Length: 401
Image (cartoon, rainbow, N blue to C red; front, side, top):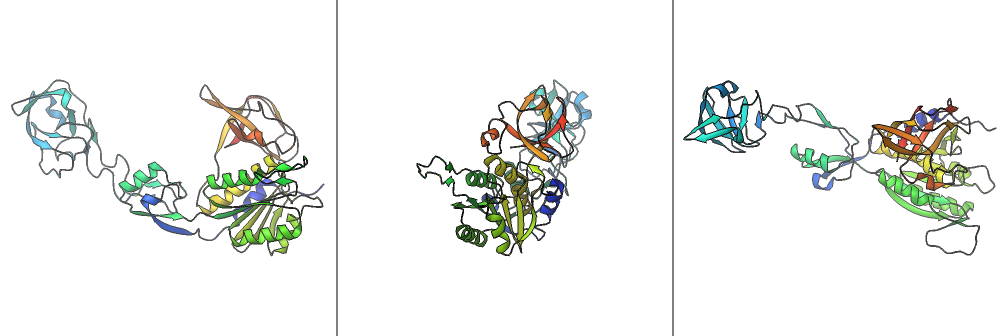
C-alpha cells in the first residue's frame, strides 16, 4: 500500500507556500464592496466623542427631578456646538444626536414632562444617565473595529464611512485558472451520441467555489487526455494565474498524465498523496510564486479537496483568517469510518431546540462521484484518522457550505 502523508502535515505545508507580502491596492470606499481588507481598521477617536442625546427631551441634572419645576434655557438642535453650562434647576431642550450640555447628566424624554411658560414639570422620573450615550459607547480610540481579511459588506462600508475613510487598502484578488482533464468529459452544452462520456461539472463547481472565496477565475475548460494538449493547457494557465487548479490525471492510471507533466514544467512537488477520503491522490506543487493544485477527477472528491486545499490558498492571498467556517454539531446517528484516513463525509445539518445536529439522511454512500450529496443543507463532517466508530450524541466538527 502506498504511503500517504498525514492530512495535518499537508495542511502545515500548505501554509508555507505563500510567505511574501500579500499584494494590495487602494480603492475608493464606494468601490470597495465585496473586496477584502488588507489591514486592520483601528479607531482614531472615541465614538461618540462627547455625551450625546439618544432621543428628544430635556438635558437636566438628575438631582433636579424632585424640584418640581425646572427652567428651560432654550433649544439645542443636532449639530449645534452647545457651549452653555447647566446649573441646578436648569434644563435645555436637546434633540436626538445632539451634544449633551456641560453640567447635565440625564435626558428626560419630552413625553415625561409638561412644558408651560418656560418651565417643565416632571410627570414621570427617569434614572441617572437616561437616554444619554456615554463617550466611546460605539467604540473607543485604539479599538480594532474591522480585522484584516474581512470581506467588505454594507456594514463595513457604513463603519468606514463613519471613520471618514475616503479610500481603503484591499487585497488584490488572486488569479486562479481552472482546468479539467479527461477524454470522457463533455463540455457544457456539447452534444455526443457516446453513452460512455460524462458531462463536465468539476471545473464549474470549482470556479464557483473560488469566486465565492474572493478569487478571480479564468475558466480554461476541458482538455483531452493526451500529453501535448495537457501540457499546452497548463502552460497557458500558469502564464495567466497565480494558482492553477486541475481535476483528473493525478491517480495511477495509464492516462493520468498530470502527475508527470507538472514536474516537467519546473514545479517542485510539495506533496502528492494524502491520507484523506475522498481525494487521497491530491497533489500540490510550487514554482517561485505560483502554485499548482491537482485534484482527483470524481465530482465529490474534487469538490471536497478544493474546499480543503484551494480555499486556504485563496484565503492566504486575501489575508483571511479562516478559509471556511467550522462548527460543532451533535451526531443524530452512529457513524462508522470506512478507512483508516481522515474522512470528510457529506452530512445534513439541522437546528433544533437551540442545538446544531448532524446526520446522513438522504446522503448516498458509494463512490466519490456523488456531487448531489452537497445539496440540501449540506456540510462536510470531519473525522480524524484516530476516529473509528462515533456513537450517536458525539460532538463532531463540520465544515459549513
